Image 1 (cartoon, one colour):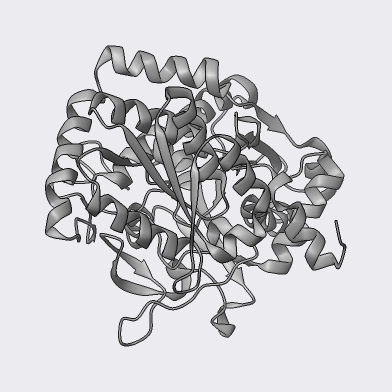
Image 2 (tube, rainbow, N blue to C red; image 1 turned 90 degrees about the vertical axis):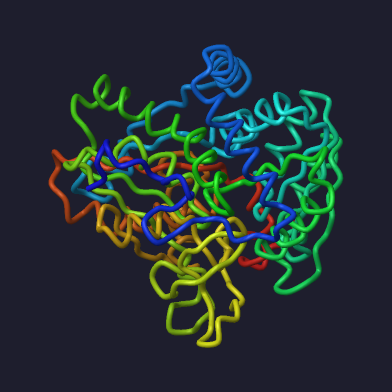
Length: 401
């Protein structure tokens, strides 16, 4: 169990054996400046007030904690509550982080914003805040993800951002992040890189966690007011891991609440076509951090597969790696078909269409809830809405839109 007197990450940006700063020397000064500026500003009353005002007036927080009454009855067992991040402005949890980071970028005097995106939601969120603040924005996105997330690509462009297609490697999120980091090295003086997950070199895992922990903080308050007790179980999907960490972090010291993250099982762990480094990976270094990775015995990064573009990543945030090792959180998988089934079921039973990323967490809840007592409570993070995934689902069903 993490203790209050143990600072995580430490001064070197490490969560136990994970995290750190593994980057080109040209980026070290920029990361040191970012860490220093963040430490100075994160407790500044004016800055905190500005972030809070944007979360309320621009994003629409707090998001509701919704009792899924019909689904709970259908499954039997535990009561299921949905943390409705899908109702945020732009349709996902990603906006929480971008609202905070762009205000940090402005205070640092940066004039150009870059980002990477997989499912497109972080790209949309970044383009949205850049438009609001009148800043130039470039979003890197894998060629494969551009095809399956065409709706979000168009949204990003309408918001005035440039979308750069990445056709190297597997043409997905990993490769988009590679290109974004190359851009940052070249343009570090005027450019701020808004990373979309609790991944990358220090201080990004901490910054993204802190800004998105508004989710878990709200659940703490809402649980007391609406449920009358703390949840017995929190569940969230895990790719890079920002939506899960945002939910989990405020609960780390509440030992009565279990934490479960659900990775993308793809076509099955035995096929190698998945994105589950915590369940089937090994330790290594990628994108400036030490963490669990999908890699071969020579340390070469392996291609990933998931029905959900936002989970199609061969690594995971270092704090999740640490939580796994110390046993505070457990991590499992849901495969493509299980996620698709959960996507359809929640849509039909509750009238809420979740993102395919979220559907992985819901697939676990489908299996877990019936084994729990009727007085127990599960809170699952609905990290985004499923509008963006209609083309993907239709293609699988053989339907031409």
